[in-house]
Amino acid sequence: MRYPEDVRYTSEHEWARLEGGLVTVGITSYATDQLGDVVFVELPQVGRKLEAKKPFGVVEAVKTVSDLYAPLAGEVTAVNEALAENPGLVNQAPYGEGWMIRLKPEHADDMKKLGLSRGEEQRMLAAIGVARFEDLLAAVPEEVRLTRPLDVPGPLSEIEARQRFGERARANDGDRAVSFLGGGLYDHYIPAAVDAIAMRSEFATAYTPYQPEVAQGSLTAMFEFQSMIVELTGTEVANASLYDGATAAVEAALLARHQTGRARIVVAGALHPHVREVLRTYLERDVTVVEDRGGPCAREDLAAALGPDVAAVLYQHPNFFGLLEDPRGLHALAHEAGALAVAVCDPVALALLEPPGLTGADIVVGEGQSLGNAPSFGGPLLGFFACRQSLVRRMPGRIAAQTVDRHGRRGFVLTLQTREQHIRREKATSNICTNQGLLRCVPRSTWGCSASSG
Image 1 (cartoon, rainbow, N blue to C red):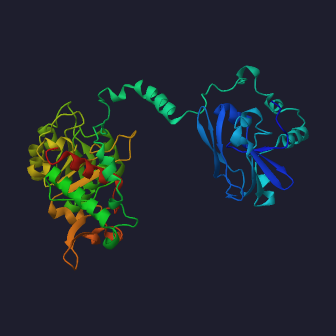
Image 2 (image 1 turned 30 degrees about the horizontal axis):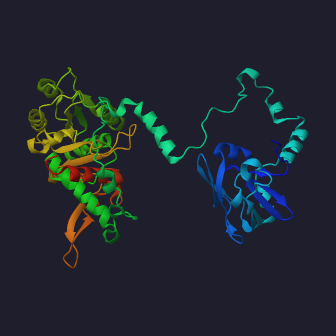
Image 3 (image 1 turned 90 degrees about the vertical axis):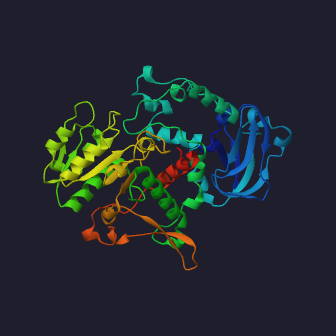
């Protein structure tokens, strides 16, 4: 096919030709090759005003259906009525009798914004001193140049695209295999209703929850999440979430240091190694790791690591190797040394295990990703933080509370805000004064779908 030298091209594969103040528009021969035989063309009415890069019509072919896009803004002055009777003209003469519309451009200079015409390209090449574009590639060895069209299939219908992706998905064993990967992030079953419930607009607020009159959706979600975490951990109060489980563990250590006036944190060796690294990043030399013997934390090893300078004992239950620790024994040793006991827990395991708050843990933290959020290649994550009531003034983050309005109707507000950094910045015990939003809504939906029996 001979390509005209007086047309300009768009990235959507339309062409435009300026003739006597009017612009004729059609689709390129490349587009017709990809579409196949055209069987129907829907064009706009004369007089319609078009916006640049917005659809103005539809072309239907044997392979697929595609929108037509206006290369520039203007008013339609004519349409190719011959295409109603013979849409095949688009295939036979895309740059001639197969034209689509003519329009009067809104601005005379708009044509300059489109791609180069063949004639303009030739003048530029001549100015450079070469005859063809390919001459500019002379430095690229012939053997590495691609001299054939890419082996990419043409446009697919929706059904064909679903079939193609289905074939690829069925070649993956991910849906049929049990995943033992994770190391803190795990692939649990997520009920289909979870995302639909969590994404409802009732639980979203356009503004921060400091103004309860416009934030009841967000505050309700916070309160319900806190209530569920308290029940799961056996503690007395929980916050509205943190950014991840490792951050929650660090915040627990910082709280213990403020509460006790001591500096050193003793960590069981089977605590997740990433959590240990985050603790070291914050506390540097004030972290003592009890040697891991390949099982639960030995009481004698923990006792040897304790001293009058220890603020908290952190352990993971179940530990990083999936083994159950002895929470009662570890709590007792920590309290005998005057330290706080901090349990780092998997929330799914807590549905079966005795809640650590009921056996003496002062603080319970963990990673909540497994409560309905997908692993997602490592994030985003959801930390939870719960503790006994006597520590609530030092707890980081937000706390939602239930109250009533002046009409006696139940409502929710943020409470104990004076402890937060945004008010007592110089006395703040934590830099955390926010929470996860959407990720926190997901566990609420998961628990709701599972009921109290889990």
